[in-house]
Length: 253
Image (cartoon, rainbow, N blue to C red; front, side, top):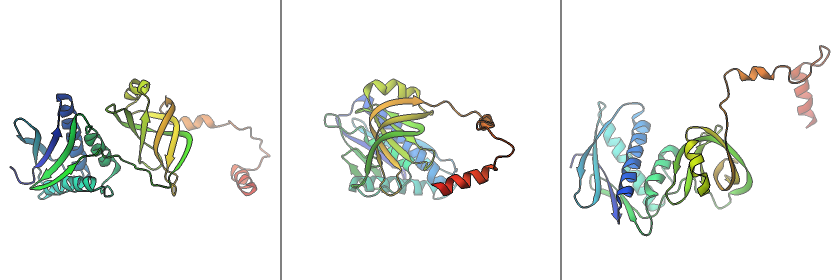
């Protein structure tokens, strides 16, 4: 086996669909890791091993920068170890989302475990990883969130990851079955989702949305459209300038 080779193993009853989904999600995870750790330096990844009779896939990478593939390999096994042990996730939300998709294949009557392996190190994951697990004192309220749909998953229920424009953090949305086609069509679009929102108690940042009541795709804002607001409020030459009016409203509150 090549040095710093990355291996993904699926345990249990593995269907062709599960295997295909896992390979796609494995590829997405490695691609995201390569971008984050390589900082724009390209890495070529090739399959270096497929074990006959089992769902074991091994890949090896090459890069012009010495040590880069080693760092990605170490990040890969570190992620596996943290997820397996229930430790805080050590990388970005985008990578966490890829791991959630990859481990989402785990279920009672199919794939029973996902194993990350690098150079003899092994991390076995037997529970689906879930991003943005709310803290015990998380706040809940009915409201709306706005953001861009980054990913959609329909395994084990319809789920979408939406990135909000303020924090640039992932919001996990659990949708209804009837929303499946809508959210698939909304991929890479800005949406407004109404439902029961769980928020971080310190920052107020939305973490997840359940009991979704409505969804709507928001039309993109045309460049320069802010100019249409000119004259929206009647203004007389004798009126106070805007900064004075704003200060007056601020002081009154």
